[in-house]
Image (tube, rainbow, N blue to C red; front, side, top):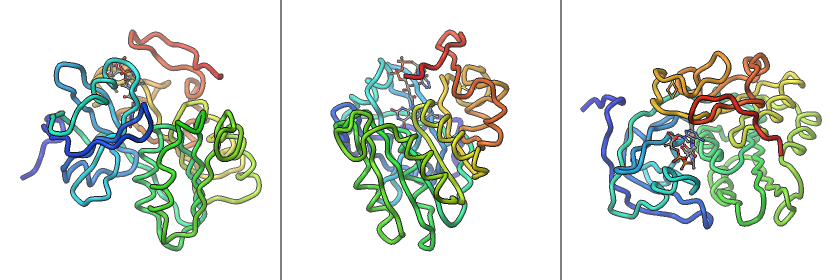
Amino acid sequence: MHRNHNHTTILTIEKVIDETPTVRTLVFSDQVMSDALPGQFAMVWIPGVNELPMSIMISKESGKAAFTVRKHGPASTGLFNVKVGEQIGVRGPYGNSFDLKEGKLLLVGGGTGLVPMMRLLTFVKSTDDVTVLIGAKSKNEVFFEDLTNDLLADVTHRVVVSTDDGSYGKPGFVTDLVEKLVREIHFDGVYTCGPEIMMSKTVKSAHSQGVFVQASLERMMKCGVGICGSCCVGEDLVCRDGTVFDGEHLATNKEFGYFHRNKAGILKNIKFD
Ligand SMILES: Cc1cc2nc3c(=O)[nH]c(=O)nc-3n(C[C@H](O)[C@H](O)[C@H](O)COP(=O)(O)OP(=O)(O)OC[C@H]3O[C@@H](n4cnc5c(N)ncnc54)[C@H](O)[C@@H]3O)c2cc1C
Ligand code: FES
């Protein structure tokens, strides 16, 4: 039966996977979410708590999907604490998706920004050559490295992890690696999702080399469907016009990389540390 994606569907959590002490993946059966495109998100209702936007994570099992949540404030902690057998509500999928090129691809992800990157990897071709950069603050915040290698088992690829404190992989910021790579190699497509400072630097590096680049943006969301305006970034609404934007477009956006809005809609500087 056709499902109205603006109506909330109640789902039961079937499996919970601890990725790190503060990040969990919650798996459920749902064909609609399983078929979501890379970059799309759902509005997730945690009964009695709140509703929050979440990228739709893949599952290795067909007909299933997941959410990978980092415990932060009350809403995400509510989702983090949902147990096997308990229920959540979902509406969506919402938003556009990445335009996946063929050839040499560079994916740059950090934290739960890796979620849309994992779904994107399920669409790469065996003839592509894929480099995945995973950035984290420290070793205990690294996850999805093994999954990335599994998803790319039949594709020429390399996965490079970098940690800010040097406790695992290459020491330093992942964006320094991006800058070096885009100068040395001509990529056919660069894709990024994660902290805005990481995305902003990645987009600038690639765009300045004339390389096609896309970023999946995150903003405060309430409705998820273009009504409330809380997710605006410059003239764009992230939920309706994105979440995926081209580097070409972002280069003209005065807020991306510099400002976001808090829950009251007040413009705040994005901290660059
Ligand atoms: C498109 C999109 C995809 C996301 N995917 C993921 C993901 O896969 N995993 C993950 O852990 N987090 C993801 N987030 C961020 C996640 O939605 C926020 O961390 C979460 O809403 C804030 O949780 P909280 O507990 O701090 O909220 P609270 O402080 O309890 O805030 C209450 C409400 O404010 C809104 N809100 C607050 N902070 C944010 C924020 N940063 N972004 C959007 N809305 C916010 C939400 O509606 C939330 O329910 C995503 C955000 C967006 C916009
Ligand atoms: S979240 Fe309401 S307009 Fe985007």
